[in-house]
Length: 490
Ligand code: BES
Ligand code: MN
Ligand code: ZN
Image (cartoon, rainbow, N blue to C red; front, top):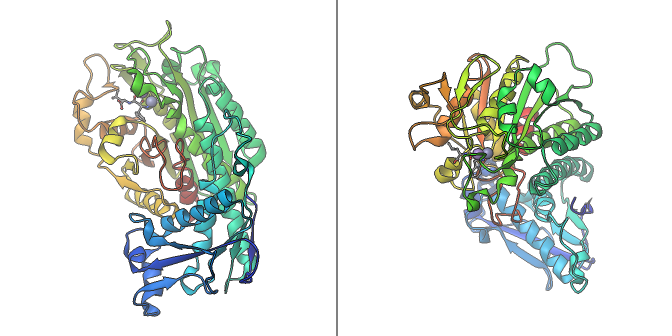
């Protein structure tokens, strides 16, 4: 776990006070860029009839202060730019070994920026360094500046409470990143279930773990089939959040996550290079766990169930073979034409377990298809489903957290390509196109029509494979904030 950053709010900060004072400057371009907060901010901008730039610090700028124009983060919307700008201040203070870092956000247009700034610092300062030895030569490595956020006209107490919530969210996101970055030798299905037990104890969640015997009894044959190729048996974990003083009329949200702790492809083995980042194939399950942690710690007026489908996809002698047929929980038979399309098999079980709870809403998150990276790149995740309102709610939650979702069509005509000569449905499409859509359609075959359900394919942004915005290379924790935000906004 990365080091915790100390922070506090101050009403104001003297010009000659200690620390690295960091000022932000936004100009009209920062506000005109698409994204959340734009309209609100534009209004502030217009009302003040600022013709060129909006200085977000009320205090005087002096020599030695750090001045960060938000426009340098060219292609980011204003909220994302603030996160990057605050991180830049933090990194400068760290390398100069100056503490505190004073984020001067007391100017007229700056309301709402504090939260984003703290988010940028906590997410941006994260590094997975568990297996790296510290270099005693680099003193700055062990130095962490304290962060002061200048409140200006805002009530410092109200602001502090809001910032505490954001801190909780970000620490949970960083925990998701730890799980995803963790080497697969140390995190198989059982160890992941163990981590979920820890989360449950810490965050006040109920938990139930199904082992292979129970999975057999419950007819979770997709999980069992995928897990068969590994020495480490699969698990299905159910976590539940119940509001403290809930009534009978509470809504119920089910969140489902793909948790393939390593995806070798199975007997349909992946080529070496494609296997490289496959420890991240449990990022959907980790995001669901993270969302439940956030909800458990911050509370909600909704019942929430998280279901993690955990298995390792390996090509052991016991592995399922191309041509095998699985009889799923609902009686539908699936021909496994490619053992590398394993995510949909484990999710089908988890979605059926979720649907049996008759939730008002159900969402799954999964690093499901390479095709999604081809279609949308690494910066966007796909959302697909039958329910307009749910899809729009998810997109909105993503805009709030800076996790962008793009809807792809849930085009049922493509089910034509999922036909099998030997079973009710095949696990891959016969066409080489539209892989993200056909994967979602497969999942849809295991979700009753009457359930409002949506699917997130997070194969791109969960593990982008390089430094991105305020994220170090590796896992981003993508999706946890969307799922928690969906619940919060209900
Ligand atoms: N886990 C992969 C998808 C993936 C690929 C995620 C690259 C992140 C980066 C998934 O299990 C998979 O292997 N999908 C196959 C499906 C195909 C066999 C129909 C794919 O995308 O090639
Ligand atoms: Mn696969
Ligand atoms: Zn996979």
